[in-house]
Length: 229
Image 1 (cartoon, rainbow, N blue to C red):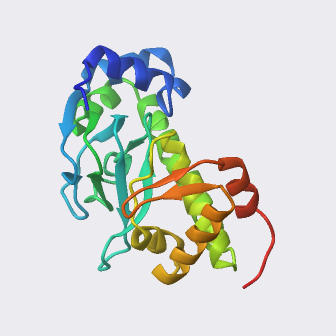
Image 2: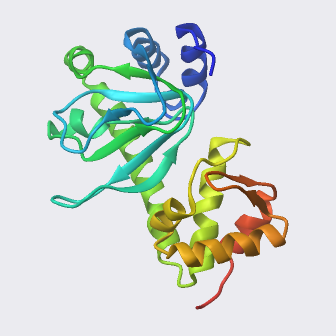
């Protein structure tokens, strides 16, 4: 992937996700004070349990987010898309990281350090509200994940996972069938059968390590349909 410039990063992040929803002055300062970082495939951005830090915004590439409650092993839950920001919990709680963030492919991110966030909040108490908005955006997305996991039929849970990942755009989804199974709470055998079914219907194509959605509308309609095991 060609290295992107800070100017390009500011344009992307200023138009997508969290920052278009906050006041212009705050958005401008976030972009000005953020550092441009590059990560190789598989490189961690931060680990579960790392000391408190700032927020990261995804400019280009794909990141995986693995979550876990206390004393549990993190499991893959979602993929980040350009415009996606995370890491806000540390600013609000001063607790260690509650998730693991890792680059899946060559990835570029903006990083706003915790001390910069503290300086901004010291001058303007509304900064806390803007960061809380980011937290609620994350919570609302996790509501969607919970909703999808409560579907009784495994094929619909699998379809829901695949449909959510289309938010990364038209690029192939860099997930193995085992990883889809973790995200859908389904066995690899069940994932294999479902993907074969979806491919025969013309909704996707797949290789060993990637899946390409060819009919996201059909996949979404199936995912949201009623059904039982």
